[in-house]
Length: 337
Image 1 (tube, rainbow, N blue to C red):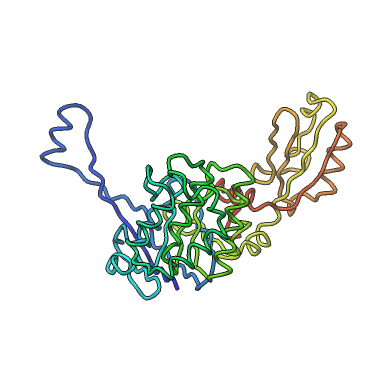
Image 2: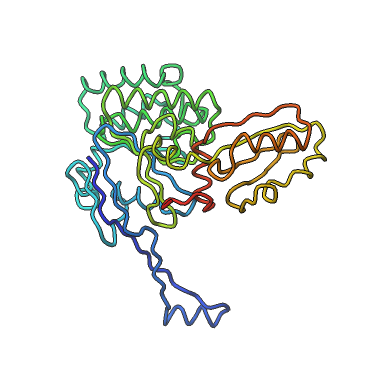
């Protein structure tokens, strides 16, 4: 369905020297610098797959998505979606994709939601019978009826997000791009949005590319992730494989009887550990100890902690996808290990 081969995007940046003289000089004899935003990225996405596309701010995620949606043209490399090249076949291509940006809306602010959908129906050239069936399905999955007659400007963030997802699916796209679909939403609404995305994917076999900073979205919706950093791909595989390969990262949490007594704990010295092998954080009440279980066993860590200080509560958790990914970006976890 989606083929991305050696995709690269460079931007030309004008370097301006300081002061008025520098401004005049850069106007007549500009100095340019080439910035590589995306560097030789390749991945494939099968039909009906939900792919998590993640990375820190500035990693190049948005640039890749803009190339996949046809907004930007790659400097080099190839991307093909459902047999079409996005930036060459843009007019026909956009009829086959849906795009949702969490921070932006494609809805008309002062129109009632139902009227907005009527306008989109004409834009996408959806026939009356298909539109009727489509709206019945979207109403069922996204529960639009309670606010479909309200002006878009009166909708809550959660309602507006559901309305935007429905708008992007009105023309039955083969591929859906979701950029931060749960940003700013409360826990209950997030869960409802995730259930809706799952239902749409299961019912229609829609291929989904999801970009998000909320790793609960990734764990709930995706089996596979592509992770990028500084414009390059750093991981491509199933979440289960990521946990299996880097699952040595574990976390012990405890609540001390006396917080001042925690200063007596020196895990690095006691077990001869490096900075990347253990990290201790606290919120003033609970202490979290993230550690590499290949370097220090759980039993030894527990015994040392309990024999050194008195605790009210203590527990050890398995590897968490969020902590593993944080560790990768902090370079505590080595991908070539």
